[in-house]
Structure formats: C-alpha cells, structure tokens
Length: 131
Image 1 (cartoon, rainbow, N blue to C red):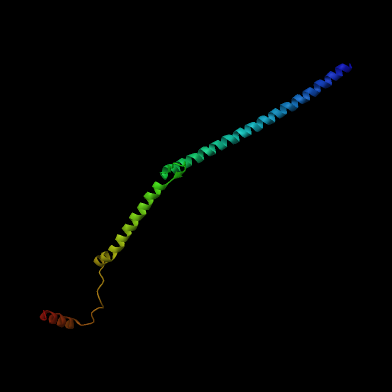
Image 2 (spheres, rainbow, N blue to C red):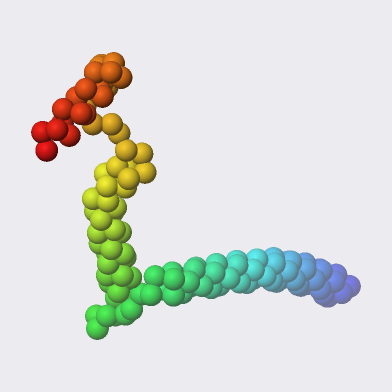
C-alpha cells in the first residue's frame, strides 16, 4: 500500500506541475498576443508616418541628393522666384498709384479762389489781352 500512496502522491504532484505548466503556457500566449498586437499597431504607425513623408516629398517636390538626403531646393527656387515677381509687381503698382489717383480723383491745385466772379472775369480778360 505504501507504493500505491506513493504513486498517488506522485501522480497528484505531476498533475499539479502540469496545471502550473498549462497556466504558464496560457499566460505566455496572452503575453505573445499582446506583443503581436503592439507590433501590429507600431507597423501601422510607421506606415502612416511613411505615407505622410511621401506626401511631403510629393507636395514640396523634394529630390534626393547624391548623399541620400532629401532637399526641397527646387521648391524654394520656385518660391523665391514668385516672391521676386510679386515684389516687382508691387513696385510697378506703387509707381502707378499716384498717376492712377490723379486721373480718377484729381485734387485741385493750390488754394480755392477767393475772388468774386466779377474779379475772376476781369483777370481772365486781362490774361487773354496779354496773349
């Protein structure tokens, strides 16, 4: 009987170890699944970031140099050319404004005439006679 109790105890002990191993396997599988989910989310994040970078490259017409670095020099050249064109246009406009205002809303030269109508007629007739 001693052997039977020893065998039963050994079987119970092995069953306990088996249950513990199964619990550890379950925990490890859950941890593995969580890590797989984390890796998947990180892959999606990196893909999203790559997509944004590609959009920037396309929008700014960036080009890769010989050193492997990206540059937007062509975009900046076009931008600077637009700024120069704008500034030239503004200079031309600012030169035109006084002439434009003089034609559209002319301002009287000098102060208003303080002479009466009779005095104005006398001055005009004198001016005509002197010609």
